[in-house]
Length: 370
Image (tube, rainbow, N blue to C red; front, side, top):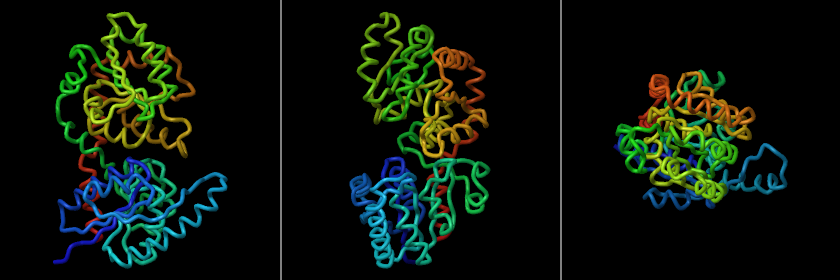
């Protein structure tokens, strides 16, 4: 029996590439497959994918903007070039199925595959369908969804299946370990509750400023593990030096946490975060209660819509950034983190939404149409 040939595509950010690699690894476990990854010649994937031992072909692609820009005209030619490159690659490789994870590069690949009659399976992490998937929707054989189906429009539900989003394999490794491992790793006290604050790898100024203002009132009873991002890190370091000695030990500040991020999440009793789909998916799998302050300028307000799903299921609480005050943030954190029964209930609700086998579910969907 011949190997199944699969083209995978997705790029531009680690949020597209890393989950795609997780799905590829599952495909290799489940079936005899030959995988070709098609990505942007200038994207992160051009380096990351070959480093993971996967055959890579690069194409040109242009950014799809919802606003006027002179670059829209030049990028239109790049999209056209990428489309014809994709046609040639698909005709040469002759895949049984194409998997698209998102990013601008998926549009020419998905369109070329659809026109050539190749089944296309997509994945959407957010509750709001991204522009790439909107364009491809009519050509899709199916679409795996990061949130339950009833959070999507009817035309998406017809082709959609709730699989969850593939999460960082490093997170999966510690998903069933004890909170104490993270606590020990960061030198935290086991008996004092832990708040982990993260605005993403770049930080979030509004969150950082609010945390800075409430730390003196928070630290006597709560340990704060804080990923601030590089921009606000110097000013937070200065503030940290002004704290009384007995409170300094309760504040662990980092500009950026890389390999230790899974342990940081695991150490927390409560996570204060933005509403990115990948982070929320990790919190579900780790059964972590969340306090969510969505990014107001996120495209199509998708972070707020993601967060609402979490809140409606009882796994998190939203504070809108425009309504956030230091008093509101302080009272909400203290009210949650001191209520063990409430945190346990939120943890159980997060677990009920979790799809720890998301990569496998997506891989099986791909194989079912190959």
